[in-house]
Image (cartoon, rainbow, N blue to C red; front, side, top):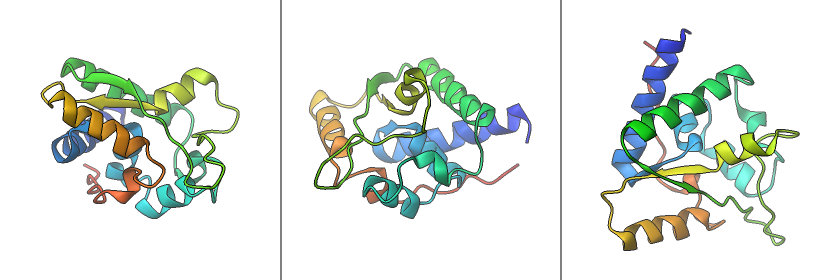
Length: 150
């Protein structure tokens, strides 16, 4: 798959998630690309696996490219960058990891939530509270549509 093809697929998945929920995360894009399934995210949020990356069919440069494409697209649209808190839905409520041994900058990139500035402040606060709750993660929302490979 060419870089241009991945970029167009990331843009389509990000735009769909933003239109549907008013924000977008790298996890939302992976769901939209078909790289993750809602059940994978549920297992991760429930602490059944240590790293979300274990479910991904791509690694390394492809994931970096996804993050760069999403970041560029979101900045071009003037979306507000916030940090999503991913906490397990387990009794110890531990922070969730995206990748074992990844540098802090990589984990931070995965925790980025891009929010529409057009949303009222109260709605943005509700989004933050709902998404950061262990019970209401991205997989608890309507599943993202897969973006076909062109």
